[in-house]
Length: 219
Image (cartoon, rainbow, N blue to C red; front, side):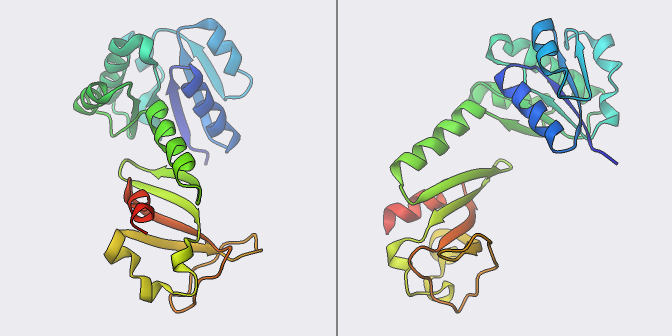
């Protein structure tokens, strides 16, 4: 059975999320009060509705409690509407409620009114992009929830010839290597803790937000 997700707010972030979820087989209901935005995503999602999501009666008709997740992606032009919509979705029994915040204060308020998870896409992208520029060995990053980051990075030179047992990365840096792609190979594999690293290896790590950056700065 397909997962059902409602996305409220179809600006750049909301429409991108709606399209991406739909492309991955999720049944998406997209909502916005702007008819042009609704029309732009209508061909790529299961259903697209045009109404003001702060209207309690109309929002309730979408049955938020029946959906696997509800995403309030209303942009920074309508912070009050974002907070109101998030609160209404929570009251209507949304199982997993995700809010988009514009700043730290907005994020705190969204959590107070019931958001299970809060994202700030502009800030998160900016931080990841900065890491890519500053640390040339970082190939990519992907946030995992609110506290962890999955990072793909080229093997640091000081790691070459050494293994995970010797390096003790979790103890020393709070970084866990969960997979490795050997030099010249496309597939990733579970790392052998006794096997030495080689030039060209790529590590896939899981760590708290700044742990990999701090590790690279200390090497």
